[in-house]
Length: 133
Image 1 (tube, rainbow, N blue to C red):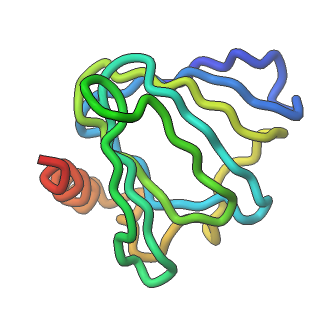
Image 2: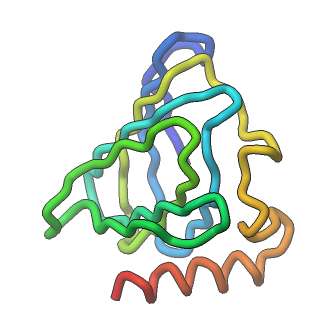
């Protein structure tokens, strides 16, 4: 669930709150077309941020939020990434360049579970959760 703080999605800077529970599926994606960066601060809870190379190999994992050494993260344009929610009621404050553009197929990783395959999504999320235990 998100709550937009910007008044219009066409604004040059989009600011929003993202509220999520464990089990939330965030596909591996990037913001290449258009090239956009994004920054997030974890206001409540904890997430695991995962960065991938172009072949789908994990290149970085970062625990962010409550009881960690990081309260936020920044993802540069074109970087494959995802996150896993590690606590219910996690809330992120997100800032990214506008105007808002929905993710296109070219910005969703081919190794990310299909948006219609709920079981594959559950398996993917579970594996990410376990990688942060």
